[in-house]
Image 1 (cartoon, rainbow over the protein chains, first blue to last red):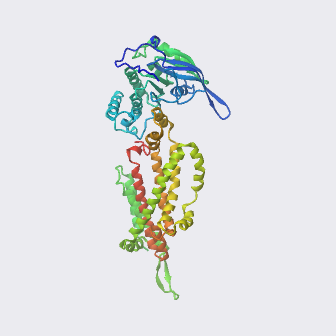
Image 2: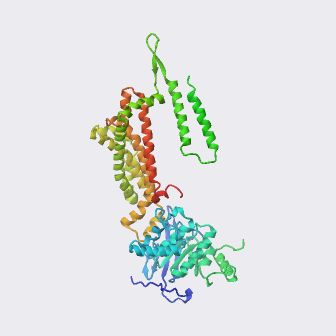
Image 3: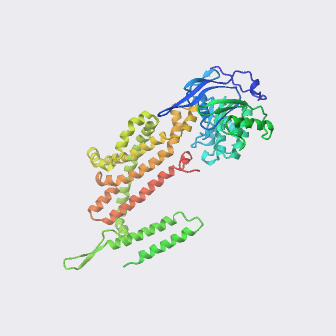
Length: 271
Length: 287
């Protein structure tokens, strides 16, 4: 599989997604997912078409039960669509791939291994020195230097999610799938982690597909927001967010986008 | 009537009441020690109440008959087996048999359980048989064990292996079947498969539960060894109980019982030490 690493040594200024001319990274075509239950069939996803550009930060926003996590699992190769297809770099996705890493809400880091060993999970086949070099770099990038020997039970939830992030970044993935990765954190840690995530994204340039049900989270992070409607899950609208980082939550533009998202989700913003 | 035990019990109860009001941390062994003191006193009281006078045909007092040896006579009864080394020798034989049988069960049971837990077909095939054999008390196997192995170590080891095997295999099987999916998914995402997936994820994820099942199995094994030694061999603590009973040395019976309890505690404490390793601590406590 011919693949060029899109990462340039010096991070170029980010190009808004509309201006990118490269072929899209992820192509989702007509994806449908049915779950067979005892007596009936549950239609989880219907006719999903979606293109994701290389290096894009894309948020999937929707109420719980709208199938956004299922869609992410299908794109990641953990589940198969009932019909339709997903291609990454033009190759159909069949199974999970170490170049595309999932970060789960429940962290998925191993409690029996130290922070150091967790971050090194994907580097097993590299020479020891190289492993150490990479692990040190990403532990530092997520701000966990000094905790290398700690075990997950000894660190906070936010730190665990940093370990999961460092573990994902250490293999230089070209796509990171995040399924409500900040959902288990307290609200202050969540805000702080959003900032960290943006900083890391800008520095490392991976494509990120980020599932959330939090409107503010999607607005703070995403270049585009795919709003999904529930049962069966469909794309209601794809909302571009043309605001520069750091995004000022107090501006009128932000407010208008937020209202728009609430409308699409079918809830009035004024309670 | 001897009031001393009652006085000691009251004293110990007051000490417990006083100690539990203290805010400072107590010495770890204080409360268990006081409870043990109360237990021994109640034992003394019960033993005193249960003894009766033996009289001859003329109604003349001959001697006291103890149906329940007192703590004092138990200690005195154990002097000889301790002095001549019988107790130590028997304890070593019992521990040796348990170690051999338990080790055998672990060596077979853990891999088998992990295998059957990982492959659904293996589970479906093996589990019904295991669950049907499991409720059969190992004691029910004693006649067959003696028939097959004779009155030898092998018979007892076989029984212990049998007794430990089922908790170990069931525990390992359940451990694999309840691994949180998120670990397996992460591992597969990072390209782990085959033996590496097993070594780096499946086995470590199961280890705390395996250790718990080993602990349970060792407890059961230690209970079964006594029964096995009463019939299937001619040494060991179980044999000591049977032998003392046949010679009417009930003080020695109780002494052997206490030795069994103490060694059981020691074995369990050893198993609990396994829970403290970094690789498994997460499975036993929050931090």
